[in-house]
Length: 177
Image (cartoon, rainbow, N blue to C red; front, side, top):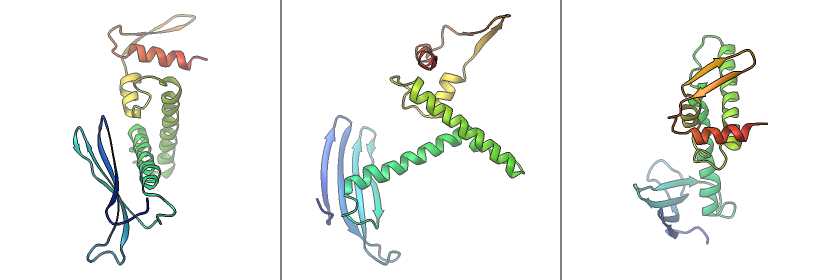
C-alpha cells in the first residue's frame, strides 16, 4: 500500500491491538517542508503505546511496515545493547588518564561479549535467553557460595535454596566442553 494521508492497517493478537499509520505532516514553523510520518498506534494490557517515525526516506525505498520494524525497531535494539554494556562497567570512565578509561572500556566490551556468549550458548532455551545482561549478572553470577580447597580440586558449594539452580545447572552443562 502506498503512503497517503491517514492510511493504515490494523492487526490484533492476544497481547493487544496495533494499527500502522502512514501520513504526511508539516509543523507550522520549524519544518520547511512536509515530512513522511509512519506511526504505530498500539494498545497493550498496560495501556496506550503510540510511536511515530518521521523520515525523509522515500516510500519506494522503505515500505511503512519495513521502515518501522526493520529500521526503527533495529535502531532501538542497538541502543538497548549499548545500554546493557553501560550497565557492566562502561559507565565508570572517570579516570584522569585516557589510557585508564580506554582499558576500562575494553574490559567492559570483553565482559559484554562474554555475557552475550553466555546468553546465546548457555541460556539457550531457558527463561533467561532474552534477559538483559544486568539481570543475568545479578541473578546467575552474583550469588553466594562456599569455596573448599583441597590438594587436587576446588569445590564450589551453592546454597540448596538458590531459586535458579536449574537454570544455573543447565547453563553449566551447556558450556562444558
